[in-house]
Length: 133
Image (cartoon, rainbow, N blue to C red; front, side):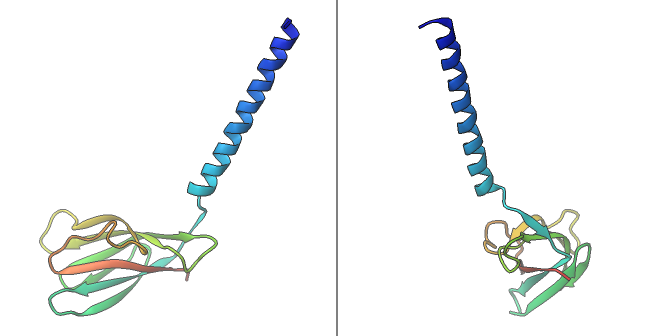
């Protein structure tokens, strides 16, 4: 094996490695790089566990609604671009009367409400869907 063969083999190996990296990156992007749209608002559902009352909260981004003794604010709502009625997730902040810290602050996922749930003794709040207008 002369110097030309060694250089040629090294270049071929680099090309194969680069091709493998491109393929792995493309596959990873297909799995985790889901394209999402941002919505103008969301529909959240609230439950008063004491009275059994269920209320739908139709909120625009930046809006706050009162549900009994808690206030629910919507920061953002996003959904899969190719499936507007699909899995919505919303940035929600819930504040209880008389409490200095939020009772909940974070993303809630419509398809998995227990994944990131409000932990309140009286109220449950979860995301139903995003609304586009």
